[in-house]
Image (tube, rainbow, N blue to C red; front, top):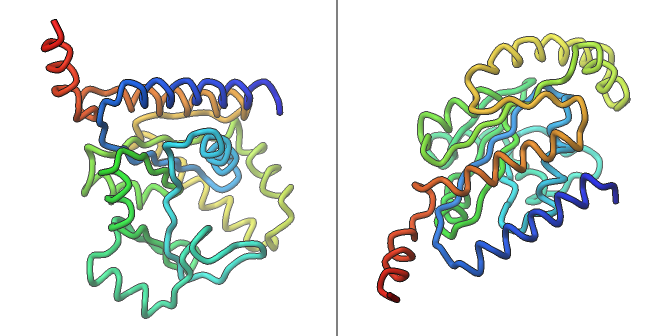
Length: 230
């Protein structure tokens, strides 16, 4: 384990332990990470999730077919198009969008249960989904856009995956330009030149947002309790 990831683990262990000991009730937040494909969002998300016990990954529904290694209920909830459209009609999704000829969305009930219990939920969604969350749950939302250091580096990372045909590659690069034009709509911007620094930056954002007064719904009782001890 390198220094950056070990530092992240130790830091989060201390933060979680302190918050538990103080026992101040808190409403969870929705941490959105968006980026063009290949900018490093997934690597950053996995590193933070690995070391943060109070953060859960939102699991989306999708109509696309599973990729090798993906599991139902863990990576996505894979559903048919008729099932998906029924969920949209019943307002069961916090956000939903069509991406590359497939449909995606976030189930509402599970997210609200986590937030009420004080756990935070991370979202891996695009700018369209982020706009929908902003419209319906702005107070719970913290949005972060991950930018690559350059277009050349973005293309190099995508080609390094060796997963897509040339046609799909060109579509992804064209889409990246459009996605990056939406960066001003986000609360925070991280330029992912060094992944360890980017992980630390996103973790700092999460820690600061957890300490916002309006998220710590148990502060009144906590402070009143201290005053009563005098």
